[in-house]
Image: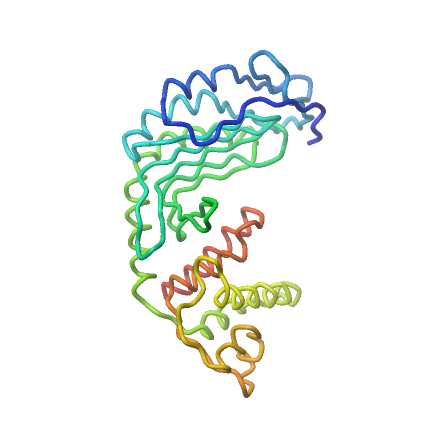
Length: 294
């Protein structure tokens, strides 16, 4: 898609939650397809116009928001919200209960985002998120959060729009599984060498080169992450292993394995992919979760 025209719509950060106010704010949003283009209006002003194929399906962001809010309230009791309707991007975040586990801050959240200019797929994510730095950046927890992610195709948008509302009853189960994951990660340890050995089990040579870079960053994060660096006394050989995992993988002299808390392994590895494309983040989250749970 090529965006033809952009204007500012609305952008609100961390307002007190009010369902009526959100209803009022999304009501002026109108998205429709005509003559091979997706038009996005807010308050009767064109804020985005993008070319699209005949397969493109319009996601009615405003109506879905109004439909799911009462159901969300039954599960996570929202306290604050943020809303963005700018150009062809629509995003709603609901922030609920916040609590601390072993010095890490977690919060129940819902994220619903979509686009009408090809910028991003339809995404809904609800469950526990962890605050990962002092500016409030949040990241999903484990591989158990409840997600729906799909491209804007006619044959998938309608189905996934229904799923958004039909599967809200899974929220409590999702959060329970995430808490189980956190407790397991907090109370168990793992060999650093075991982690990187399993992460490198990839047959594709080009992909292995990329993985070496990711694993090197993983080791650096274990040494220096602002929120998750190891609180351990390490000897010279262990520091060498974290800075240069290839030497440890090859069993070279001067490198020694480190037994680390699983929660640090999980957080420091996923931190490597925090700003990667969503599908990459999801894939690596799943891989490290499977290694640590086995």
